[in-house]
Amino acid sequence: MGTTTILNILQKLYSTRASTKQKYLGIKRLHLESNSGFTLLELIMVILIIGVLSTIAAPGWLAFTNRQRVNKVNDAVLSVLQDAQSDAKRRKLSYSVNFRKNNEDNSPEVAVYLKETAPNPLPWESLLNDLEVKPGQVQLDEPPEDQNQITFDYQGNVENEGDIPFIVKVSVPDSSVKRCVIVQTIIGTMKTDKGENCENNENDDNNN
Image 1 (cartoon, helix red, strand yellow):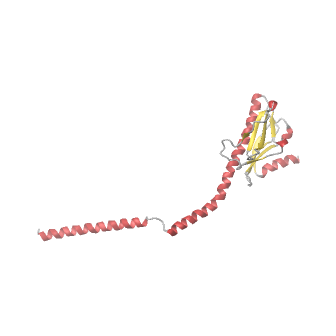
Image 2 (cartoon, rainbow, N blue to C red):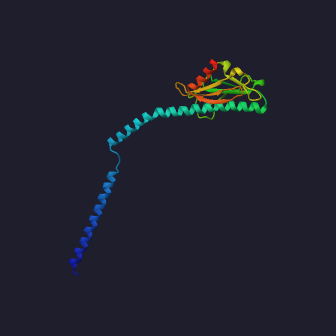
Image 3 (cartoon, rainbow, N blue to C red):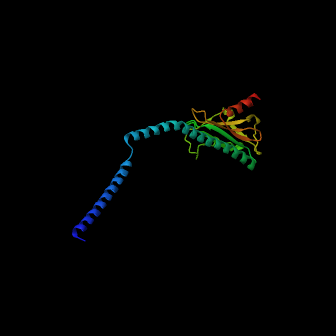
């Protein structure tokens, strides 16, 4: 094989290799260009879509969080009443439960104590403790002073039949979201309700 033939073969190999390399670089460059990011128009469209979705979702999310907050506080009211009733039966003593709104921030408060040794002042505690609910987010629809207390006797029954139904209403300020706990019977049967049903229970009793 002559020198010229060898040179021709080497030249063809080099040309083939160079052509393959150029094709590879072209494909890589095309791939990088296709993934170089959004155009300005695309970014604007994405921002607009996010804005529209946020506007649509915001009221629904607010309503959801309001319901969660008022449910937590309403559950706390129910728990306080049930615990007082249980303690009255267990210790064979009369327990009283009072509810009110704090004078400074309107947060709901409760006081539980033995009727026979009622302290002065009453041992008020916030119903928002450990609930991750801030003052002002949920309020107590405070009843008149002569209707904000209930007493369970040593058997766990409601001591004063005139207190029935005893209704504690919890709501979100400037909202229709409302929950309540109702002590329905003289034996201390309790239930939770919501919305207009909290008012209807009260009206039904007044009509009877």
